[in-house]
Amino acid sequence: MVQEVLDYLALVHAGPEALVVDGTVGAGGHAAALLDARVDVRLLGLDRDPAILEHARTRLARFGERAQLVHASYAELPGVLEAEALPAPAGVLLDLGVSSLQLDDMSRGFSFRGSDEIPDMRFDATGEELTAQDLLNHADERELARILHEFGEEPRARAVARAIVRARPIRSIGQLRDVARRSALRVKRIDPATRTFQALRIAVNDELRHLERGLRAALGCLAPGGRLVVLCFQSGEERLVKDAFREVQRAGRGRILTKKPVRATAQEVRRNPRARPTRLRAFEVEVGA
Ligand SMILES: C[S@@+](CC[C@H](N)C(=O)[O-])C[C@H]1O[C@@H](n2cnc3c(N)ncnc32)[C@H](O)[C@@H]1O
Image 1 (cartoon, rainbow, N blue to C red):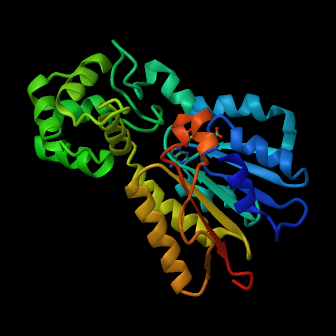
Image 2 (image 1 turned 60 degrees about the vertical axis):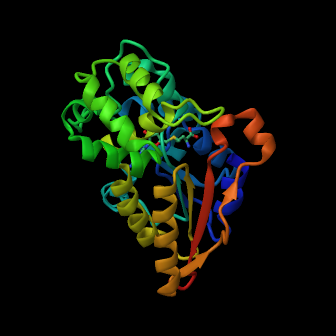
């Protein structure tokens, strides 16, 4: 949803040399589009995954000093701005979830298309210890069911949790996929293992807690008139974004720009089916804030 992101970030109040933050820079697709669209702005790109950040570094090299990349969670944005002596940003983008590059690298364990790989699923193997394999083999059945229900919206969460516990020890992606496929609800078109993999990834990386902190951080540090644009893929994320926006609007510190979340066009979904569940929400901080 590159065009929609550019439209909502708008950067109308952004003067020359303004700073835009891509809090989830990933492979740098949105970042490159932003830097191309506004040749006078600078960009700070963050990512929790040091391997992905290297891809972004290569892709954004042509922008020279206009693109600065830092290995950090977007939840740490205020600290990064201070450490790098950067000004309040005119725009912040959060494109949540996992990138295609992470899904396509089978060794990371994010994708059910793998086989003998370990279910790792950490965004940052250098800073975090808990893997999906640890959860699969050591969490109790109720905790697994909660994770599958809350983060995967798996209708058969208890059955999948039971099947995982019975199949222990889980040692490979192929084994996990087969257990999930046998026990999860089958809905046409979508592989039944999808929800299990999504739930484990969100739990291992504590993604909703990062999001809660990140929303507060971004809304608190935007420049007057600055905008926050968030792309969500999951209802837990959506709820947090909606609540955070409402709270700041109620406090009179800005306004919600998207009464209803914006969805990918049918044309985009045809080109990129992974865009189907995407929901965009945007907020503008008071000019006088
Ligand atoms: C959907 S991808 C972003 C793709 C990117 N917009 C692009 O155009 O290539 C999400 C990225 O967010 C990163 N990520 C997830 N949680 C994060 C967090 N709390 N802080 C920073 N990056 C995070 C992931 O490592 C992944 O690279």
